[in-house]
Image (cartoon, rainbow, N blue to C red; front, side, top):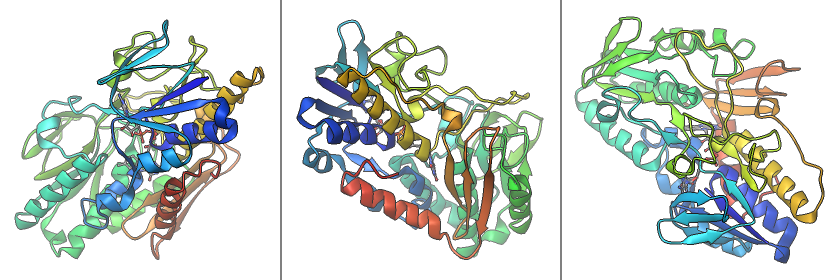
Length: 399
Ligand SMILES: Cc1cc2nc3c(=O)[nH]c(=O)nc-3n(C[C@H](O)[C@H](O)[C@H](O)COP(=O)(O)OP(=O)(O)OC[C@H]3O[C@@H](n4cnc5c(N)ncnc54)[C@H](O)[C@@H]3O)c2cc1C
């Protein structure tokens, strides 16, 4: 029995390791990823400001996976033929009995005119290092800054984190007084986060904006970005010498090139609550590659839902469990719609943090709480150390 996993960061590695751990020699598990290293993406917000180096939050995949009996292939998957059950890569072909797609996002840098040329993006190691370079240049000639998210974006949390970390960095560099700092977002109110907010979230973020003298603009899209300006959908033009706007995400080209897999424009994978493909019995998706419809009415400026690390890990485990059942001939499937997975996230605010916990990501919720910690970002650092510890040892059964 061959299980093939495409994409092996949060969701894919969890699924691959769990299946191998539970089925041992009964199954051959192969993981294809275009990147040799696991990257702990949540800490990339610290790379531009020099608080982390990329190698401190990367772990080479091959050794960890080999130790656990998972075969690693360093390659880019280009398409799949679901009839013959073959995945094509740039350098080969791989047959599967069950396929797991955990390829994360493609970042739409062309979503807004001028974004590609004038914006930095912190969500990849290369992007984070480029942002560091830009900030070093900026230091010599400071001016206005715009941070935020464009229409269609879903990863607002990472942008909020970068905003507050950057604000602290500006103070540390002793240039804060020379910088007008703006936050722009398609959210109708601060702290909506694509999950219709959390109790006290809006009030807390308003307080932060006031405390740190940040001007904010909600319910706005971006029409155009130039070297010196950001043009908003409400007609406002903000001067800016540096910008980090979170673009929208879609599924990757591997999915786009395999039309039987996806459900239209966004190229994410349509799944049942068991994370089995809606139409293909032996194709599964986990993590950011899963299509999740926003549970709220879209206003004038559309935006999307956050697909964060914890639900990515949970969906990886659900897929593993369900594939194991399928292989063993057990009919029962574990089901948990994305919005019903518990919310567990830490929003870093520059050596401060807000801990976000809820019984389900989307409303209705039985409980939801945001706890600020203004002394130090202890939990964010703890989660990073814990995750890297888990990854280095190839431990997949822990939360
Ligand atoms: C700046 C930023 C900050 C964030 N902060 C947080 C946070 O604080 N907390 C939190 O919970 N979440 C955070 N997130 C979200 C978190 O990073 C994602 O939820 C998580 O990475 C999703 O995991 P995944 O495994 O689904 O996808 P990814 O982590 O994106 O992994 C996808 C993998 O697929 C591989 N791949 C893609 N296409 C191919 C292909 N064709 N062939 C082979 N391999 C391929 C990639 O190389 C990659 O290894 C943040 C995201 C960003 C961008």
